[in-house]
Length: 275
Image 1: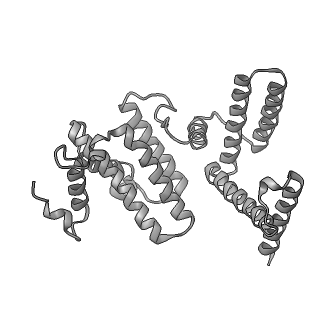
Image 2: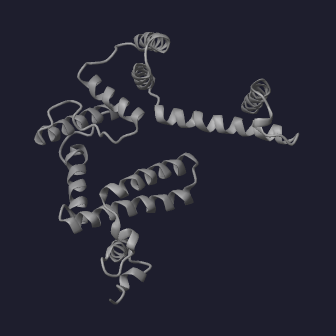
Image 3: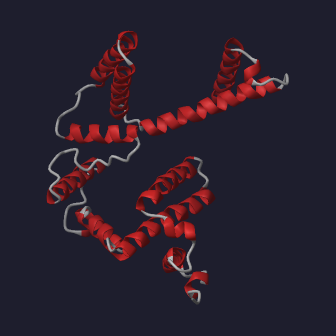
């Protein structure tokens, strides 16, 4: 089978990428690995690529972001090709649906609705449109279309935001803090008197309320935890570097010494921040 000339065209843009995907998925001449894939097997790669996009943004590495956005776009093309082969949908139907959605959800841009609104007003309008769309899909529940596959902290915040819009929310942050104390006490009691499954449940309750506190403080808990992970990694590497100066590794040390090295790294960071 002759090669589609579009595949080698440097200015082929989106159609070139789609031609490449068709060739990869061709049952006779394509790549065996690509041919075997389906929606479920590709989904983890889609999620991974989205996180890599976010990581490039966090590092402000714009060259890397360019590449990561391409990788993420490839995932959309991949799913579209599988959808077309199975008769579920096409790339054209995907783009038509998202285009229609953007137009319908922005009447202040594409219709005659007033643009004289705050960002919060527009978010409220957006949610009202989404509620109408859920009703059209027979999804009458407030929480019906909060995706199950979201990271747990992110999904917790989305669930809480949905509930808050209909009045199910603590009116003051201080009440959330009180709930955290209560849940921490219950986790302590579970650890002392109950089994592992009950401890897991109480731990989940505490995390859920912590996510609620993040929402009240307008903090992204996923971003906050990622930042904490970065800080932990940086300081632990400082411990490793300090021990390496005496030809030792962490396993050659003890908690007391490593804790002291941790505090020293923390103090240096504070000094550098104060300069």
